[in-house]
Length: 365
Image 1: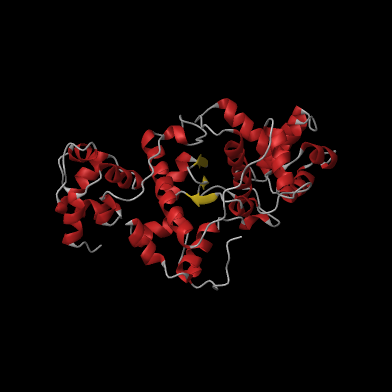
Image 2: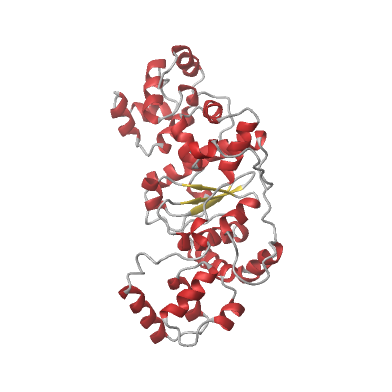
């Protein structure tokens, strides 16, 4: 990346230590690792981030080049959101390291800056997740009524939450494999962060689970069993209302019949079987037999996805970037505004060259 010395000198004079921390976390590096990569003493990066030392322009330029940001990223003066673990609905604190969670949260911090910029140019849908509720099951029914889905499967859940102002993004595969799906209630709008490797059926349940957190738990309690149980209960009732499943679940509960019903509602056989067992529609023995047959077919690891649900991908940010370009703010201009390189911006949004050729008739609805 080309770096102009004037930018580096100006940034050195207005250096923001927290911006270096954010860029390092976004890259998934520890302080010592960044120091080694750019030829610094082991403790130098930590002292920069604590404000105990002031980096010179050359050091800032090397850090920017290695971290995939522009040197101006480290300067003061731009809105900056800083998050910690307590702000996110992480499902478990035992399965991840503090560094992995910090990397995921840095992704959300940069996402907040991007959505702020896009909102100014393209106008994102207003955040609207308000509903009256008394417990997860009633909340699920309230949302269904508000969304006009009184009965039957919830169509395209990702698009449905995006239409209500929720930003849905994906973590890079190397990060998401450990962190898993999570959500944050940011100051202006909620965010749900997916992973690259989650299959479409599991993803639908995960999105419903995080929607439950955003509705039921304004104060995050990462790893809370009570919160996780409530979010699961919301997701189960939201995607598969008990009354409907009780009236349609096959009496013999053979795998093909259960798979047909699971496909109709866009959930996995495992999830539907657990739902049926919880509702008393399957005995423990029938449940075990079903899971044994599932394993024999190789579906425990890779269940086939049928019907209309394989294409549920986040699209709000891509559409917003197309509209921003229509208003004269293209991808390079957004990258300059955020002080990141174009590859980082594309990774944040999933925006590719294919989207740049999308017809300009798109609207955010």
